[in-house]
Amino acid sequence: AEQVGSRNSGSTPVAGAAVSKPIRLASGRVCLKFLAPLAGRFELRVGVQRGPDWLTEHFAAYVVHCPAAAPEPANFPAGQLAEFGLTEEAELEGVQLMGCQPEEAEAATLEAEDGEAAWLLTSTNPLGDNPDAPLPCCVTFGGDVDSPTDTGDGLKRHVLQWSERAGRDRRFRFLAPRSGWFAVTIWRDAARLRPLCELLLVADTAASGAHLGLPGCDSLLGWPANVDNQQQRRLGRRRLTDEIQL
View 1 (tube, rainbow, N blue to C red):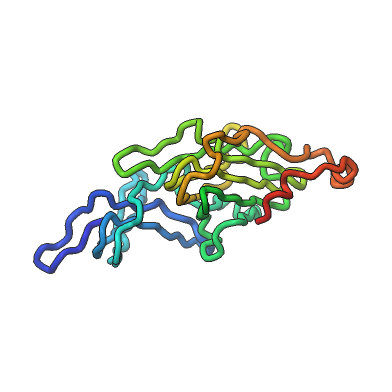
View 2: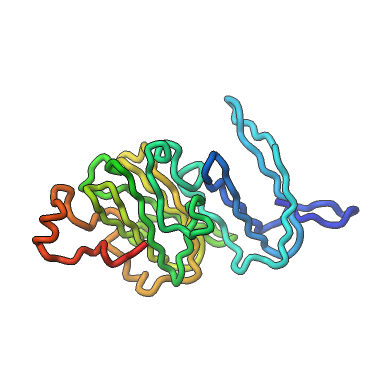
């Protein structure tokens, strides 16, 4: 991104500007998010990499008008996949992502209000190779403008997941350890060869009690896959999955 000046001064590269990687929408469309470090007009050039040498070809340019700077300059998280959203394989299999903001439901972006966010992955088939095991997750923090992104193992302690309907529904809850942008990557298999999706989350503040952590995304809550609904009712215990309504 470059800031657009007067006709004589031209454009100059802008330090501190942040552009997200593509966010996958429906029908093969994508969108980008842009954080301006200051008010003004910016030229944003978008390119694609093609061919065996992955050469970048510029195919579009936009002038972005920003009446004000971003509230808190930051980096977008790099994440683990090429773009945010459900993978093409997951979409073809009918996997659905629920719980995102209504105006961006297809964009796999969530606002962690007061530092908390919840979402649901649902499918007609089990989402993972083992319905009794947690889906592998990775959390990446975007970091500050002057610091690199963080993919520390400690961030996994802020994602909680549990299973319903014999592994065909997976619910997640996220407690942000601080304000900023986060990426949550979810896979089907322990080897992390078959990704399901990657979500982009923004937190306005740290969640209350986030410093205490959660059981973590290496743990799976909920009833085992071999316990049917009748057995659950007979056990007469309230499931934790009833506590979060998406």
